[in-house]
Amino acid sequence: MTDISRLAGQPLPRKGRPRPVAVAGTTVPVIPRWIAEWGGIPLALGVLIVIALIWRIGEVYGASNGWALAGALAAVIVGPWWLGYVRRRDAAEARQEQALYEMSQFEKLDVMTGSGFEEYCAELLRALGCKDVVVTGSTKEDHGADLTAIAPDGIRVAVQCKRQKVSVGPEVIRGLEGTITSGRHQGRKGILMTNATATAGAHSRAEGSGITVVDRVILRQWIAQARTKIEQRRVHGMRPAAKAAVAVLGISAIVVSVVGYQVATSVPSTAPARSAPSVAPTRSTLPDAASPGSVARDR
Image (cartoon, rainbow, N blue to C red; front, side, top):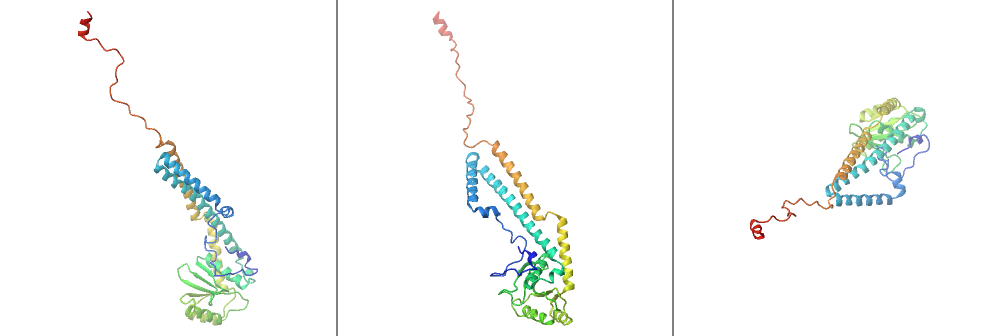
């Protein structure tokens, strides 16, 4: 995630393809740091232990309990992992928003480098709800626009960023007009973002070509909107994804408890079966009664 607290200093390095700018969650590692540092050995050992445990439970208590335990263990693993990932992502976004909040002052914008201002505009667009924000300025993919994005209403836009002290003239609008009508960014809506003012000629040409001019006055309004959104997210506290992760974790604990109780109270399938009581009459151990004939012979 771009550290925008550095935007007033040296331009950030750009290597290779244009990189997406701080879209929610994309720059937060999915794998926790401790697993990445330790490598795959602990993870592999854990998987083998879990597989052996499930196989043994299935062998002793039946396949249904084995599969139930597998699902429960999967929930136990996924729940905390997802909760940790969401918390790390939300924390990173909160830090990013705080940095954007603090940098949104014209006394800081006016001393930024050109590339630093591009980065700032990208972060501002993201805070306002734009998606797929990509910085293309000073790269092979520039083609007359410093940023590309998708506006909240779904319109694809190409943005030209100008951080300068003098007013922006119609020549800047002319260049942007060319790239959205017949250039690489053909079909996108053009937006000019600048910390300076725009001349009357620039406004006139932009109006004729359908380009939106975000000069110092409009930029101040956009900054106010972004700061309001950030403040509202602070008030709301836990974000929806974090709430969902907590719910998954709670359900995982319930599932494990239920499956554990079932396994503990069930009879192992390998236990010897008890023999059913016999219904055949048993032979008496008492001496047989003497018959009348035998009694007569004894006499």
